[in-house]
Amino acid sequence: MFMNIVKSWLIPIIVSISLFLGLRPVFAQIVTPESESNDTLLVGSEVEKNAVMQVYYVSNGEKHFITGSAYANESPDFAGDYITWMGQAVNGNWQVFLYDLSSGTTTQITSSGNNQNPKVSDRGEVVWEGWFFDSWQIFNFDGMKITQLTSGDTSVNPGIEGDYIIYARKDITGTWRSAVYSVSKNRAVDVTTGIASKYPKVRNGKIILGGQGSEKEFGLNADDLFILDLIPLTTTESAGTKEDQATESAEVDNEIPETVTEDDIFEELNATELRSGE
Image (tube, rainbow, N blue to C red):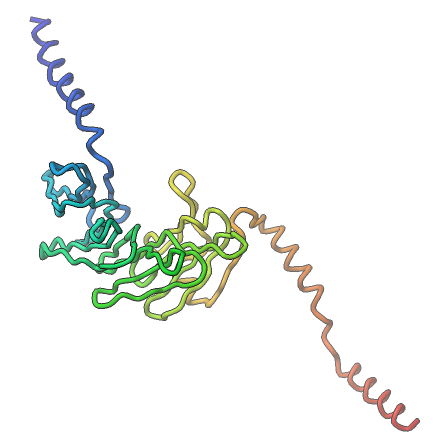
């Protein structure tokens, strides 16, 4: 009797472990939600029957493939009812796609050049890196048109939430700088510098710097940067303590000329009159 009970428990466990080990290599990428926009949805990509990567989503325990092309589709991202990804659709170059869960429609956003690393907002707006004049630049699709947001310095790792688009740029000195762009204000503000700035995010209005396992919250929210009209450029790796910053501030204050008093002005006027009389 005891052995029968043990077998009845062991067999399902062994089968479950075998299925997990057998299926685990198939899943190349699974994306889980970082916000509460659609916390029941999972998106991912895996090698399908035609031997190339395809994008799918899982809702209520059911998997639904939204691609089935002869070319690879990878790097899905989602927010709300929208899923974006990149597909090798044109001459082996990556293009950006957008899928609307509510309508079941797919839109190919780009059709030329090389485009990668797309991110989507819960409003269906998409940002990505596009290869432009020998460097990666940030582009935005607002649902109607595509806008190039950056030029010059290499700009990568975009993210989008609400009115804000965040990205990293590498200047001519090799320094990484994080920047936030406001769509409504049509301008960008630098956040800070340092290697952590290479991997910026906006999450629930907060600015997060650093990659997985090393994420840190920046001192100001995205709103703060524009409401206060500040351009903080404290290096994340050597920001120093509040005492250090206070000392630096005092040193700067000492460099400011002393206030000129009325007596100083009268003395200068008298000296000028004496020189004129001579």
